[in-house]
Length: 288
Image (cartoon, rainbow, N blue to C red; front, side, top):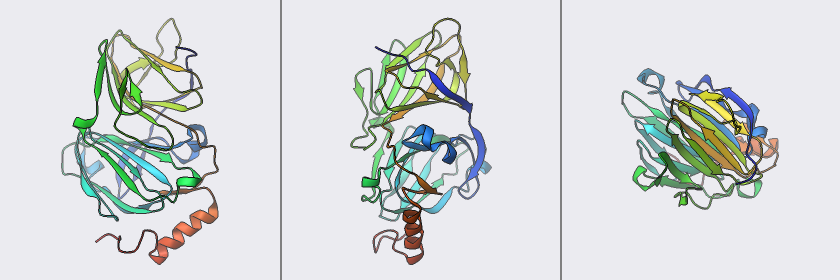
């Protein structure tokens, strides 16, 4: 295919608390934003202890970003200030573009487990104040392609000739759920110049792109790759499952405060002034 991407960063996600007291693991966040441009944050909220997650994420604002929620197990009920509401279940994907401002809440269902991920992607200055929108993708609408025993759920971008359902996103993203069986190799073409990362959540695999002995990375490991044309993942006696994400860097300044990400401190201040004045979202679209 071309030049293999090598690992430039490998580390384990860290426990943290968000929302109203949700215990989760953060793979990357604020301090890593320039290395992962256009991505801002990746949270792993897998837990089989309801006390870790039932407090949920009550009403909170977003501006200037997109939030991508992918569910593996359990349910999350969501509602926002522009009238959208629904329930995300196992295998569902929600790509929410906050744009110029939205108030949002995500409350887990009373189930014995909640498993999934939330990825944040930045918006360029030209689109930060766009109208909010959703792409809600049901599990049955996410194509699954199997090649030589390797199974890929294609949510955005493409794999083995199959296109994902997410469309018209400015960073030209790819978002895949990849399962590689033991004794196999997954090779995947990537766009040169795009940021590419992987987050392992089951088993272990070698992502180094080299030949020879295996150097395996396991559950809760974040991997970020140098530039190149493809990634290569090999497995030994164990399978591996991971999220693969990529996107076009924005190369713009970042001013970040909580769930609001703009380009300047003045724009951040304007966002919080709008919240104080009740003008963060358009009139008539406040939550009930």
